[in-house]
Length: 278
Ligand SMILES: NC(=O)c1ccc[n+]([C@@H]2O[C@H](COP(=O)([O-])OP(=O)(O)OC[C@H]3O[C@@H](n4cnc5c(N)ncnc54)[C@H](OP(=O)(O)O)[C@@H]3O)[C@@H](O)[C@H]2O)c1
Image (tube, rainbow, N blue to C red):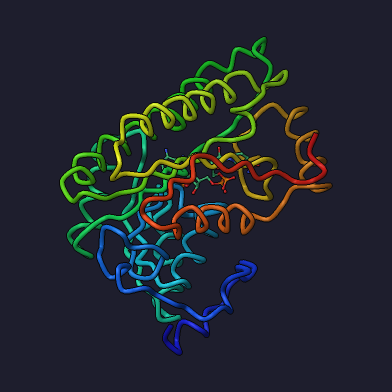
């Protein structure tokens, strides 16, 4: 680990193993059996805030080269500069996951800039929840387009390259709403159930070279409430969030855990929720 990396200004908590001496056995020099995060190229959608941003910072601090995607390119630029300023490596591209070409370009950027893509973290997502009676149909469509089709476009963009290079890891952000649904959450839940089903199907088809991980967060302290347009629902959610939501760093640590495992260890799903969440 370089000096400059030690000066990283993390908001994330240190990982328990961070202070342990790094011991690499000779076989880990083989790219196909590479473990850890050092030198891995990781593309992250939804990297402009919340979980995606926390994940980018944690990975960059652990020696990964991060390729940041989201629509707010000003935020991506600031994040990439922050990482570079601390001695890390980052590239970014304005990415709308509703557009298949944007995902292809993000993967292309990773391969052109860094020569490969080890991991695609499909994290972009929205949750404008509301009762079905509200008929907020355009929000239903947005959730389907971003949460489901965005993940599928990520698979379409990265899978051929992963097959060709003989390694690759999909990390898809679902939700505890993908495990159980509640009133007001049916469409958002439906999209996250879909992400889990698609990811599990992908894992079964992936073979012994590729890895697929589902990350299912519970209530996390991020900007996601800004998309909720039903004011009653939003007020209730804000109260719960302020009471018990956990830091996005907790989800970032789970993502790093999955990525840093040896190549023959596939972490299928991690559910991370506040202890206070029912
Ligand atoms: N916060 C929670 O309690 C919670 C719980 C369970 C699951 N999750 C999931 O966690 C993931 C991250 O959300 P978050 O909580 O970190 O919320 P957030 O801070 O609002 O982050 C959402 C990210 O998604 C990006 N995004 C939204 N629409 C996009 C699009 N069309 N194309 C590309 N990027 C897009 C946003 O960037 P731009 O606006 O710049 O494009 C932003 O970077 C989502 O999949 C969410 O469903 C969150």
